Length: 134
Ligand SMILES: [Zn+2]
Image (cartoon, rainbow, N blue to C red; front, side, top):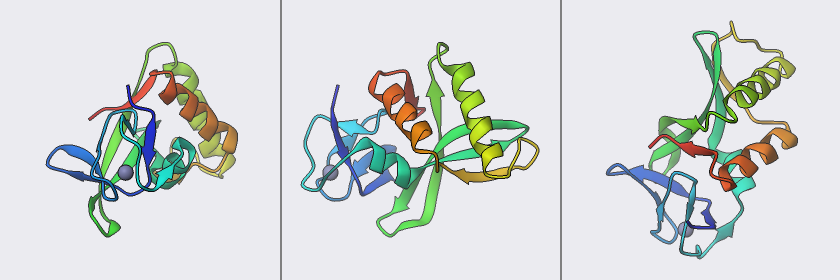
């Protein structure tokens, strides 16, 4: 399993790739190969990961750019949590949405602001309990 992270990613031909080094990125947002512009999982999460609220549920999603220009056109891709963290994750996301003045009845996208939430998500990804449903 890869341990290296990439800061300029793009979804192309059903694959997640790095625009800087060309590495293929896996469901855990990492690769086996070190990038020419190394970054951390926390930065990748801050840049690409949001909370999506719809149908009275909060989901963790990544906005994956479909062009090299970044956020002009994105694929919104959900994360797939392990059953062991599912309840804790949805509770944490709900609290994060409410702390931003939102709620599960207010559909839309919310940023991840709370650094404790981001660190917890990073740890789950590193432990293999949370992955992109690619
Ligand atoms: Zn790279």
